[in-house]
Image: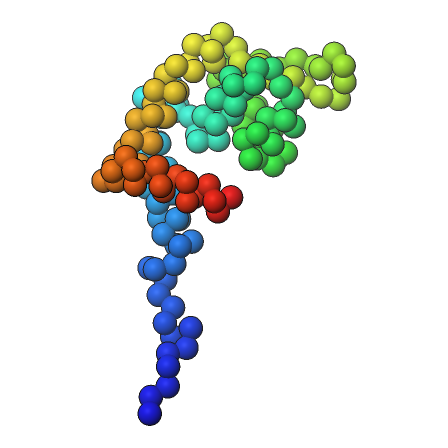
Amino acid sequence: MSQPESNTEAYDLDEQIGYILRLVTQRHTAIFQEHAQKLLPGGLTPTQFSALLRIHSVGTCSQNRLGRMAAMDVATIKGVVDRLKRKGLVELAPDPDDRRRTKITLSESGETLIPKLKEAGAVITADTVQGLSGEEASQLKSLLKKLL
């Protein structure tokens, strides 16, 4: 009589959700990079893209709040903000209520870029889910949100 396969023997990396998510993320990142290069000389990273859209949605905010909204740790968001400042897309000012904090706001160039970011974001998303029906893309998004 044969023994049933153990879980380790049945394990197939190509069928693991984490592995598939990583491959999809790599594909999405490549699509993003292709479009980001067209937006701005030197392009934008996905984290810079997210930070700009978060600042736009809430207005002036602290670096700490921006990090929380964009799901980035303190060190990461500081680097992102510094690079956005060097690109002339954000402006920094001390918080008048708390001198330990820095307020971040979009510069005029940053504000001007927002419509292009939103347009590119829609194209990037469409390219990422190309091959899925609208219903499938919506279902995928809902399922992924359940994992958060």
